[in-house]
Image: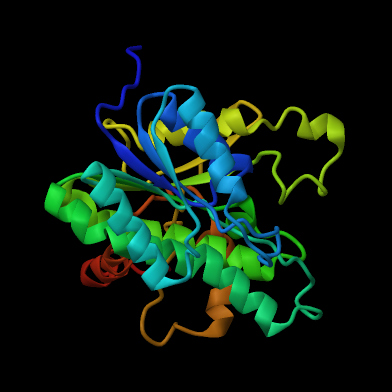
Length: 305
């Protein structure tokens, strides 16, 4: 396969001061991408801040012959994010790629979680990704080109004890991507989602050392590079970890239609095995397809007997 190349591309990578974000920034820069290394410089729980982490990554990129600039914008602050975007455009003329990677953790069981813990995690992951995306969206539309990646998690797709705030935010990002990719398609703005499993500040206390050694950030960044290249897909959730790559899809079962007079809770219970059966399940690409399925059956008189 031919080498994936980036000709005169400019990227913003949020949360790029360490871990996955740093790896993403280095991987893109090694392929000639000019990179805005964004990081607030705070701790895993979102407290504190400083420019050193981002500046260190920029120094690495420049030492390797690449181009980069550091930025400490808080992704939840619209004014700071807009200033970051303006600075990148002023320096390099455009923005082609946005990697929404910034995130924090405040893990607790829901009974012990404060609403401040909930709000801050959702704000950074979900609102922060929307804020950064909004700041580049019209610019990408005008340029008729854009590659945007959200960062989701298996916690958002399947659940994980003690992460209701994180899981809700990560699930929201998948929904954000599925709608945004429809709006950007005619402008060649492709929007995808990366679901990483990697060693980072957010995972290093959750797994044994022998497992963490296999969960390299570089293996995840290989998937990220593909998701932002010229030939990138659109609307994909790419899962990556320890050299494994897969795709998560949302499918809908064929289910049943109950006729009028039969639409009771008792009949839902009676036919629940057929409702849940995955035989003939479909992947829809827009919300209207679900309603169309049910309405078509009504028109055809296709009811469960």
